[in-house]
Length: 144
Ligand SMILES: [Zn+2]
Image (cartoon, rainbow, N blue to C red; front, side, top):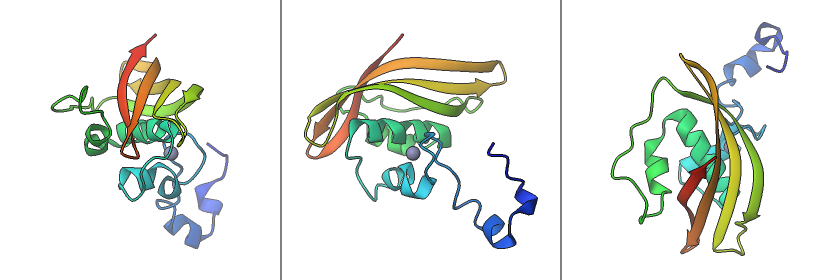
């Protein structure tokens, strides 16, 4: 929390509080100008990291449509069932290899923090991404 008491904020700000919510990917930016544009498919992710962040946000928001759409066709599951008890709380991107608009492949190493009734946990994963026809796809990942 940032320490701001919601009750001390002007009414105008409180009313738009939902629209101005921080993006779940922990970028610090509003959802609308961060992963929200990618999830809504208004803009394709330009880097592997951006796609990775948008997929974390999709996990956090339960957006299986975005997860399946951005999964490479060769590794994509037929269906996807998310654990409703698991909340994704924080993302730390630790390492990025290639994955820029000038590359066709990229690697993103990250730690995704989650919380469930059983307690808090973290998933450390190195994911591979591939860009085809100008769009980044998640290929696969190795948990460690
Ligand atoms: Zn984001």
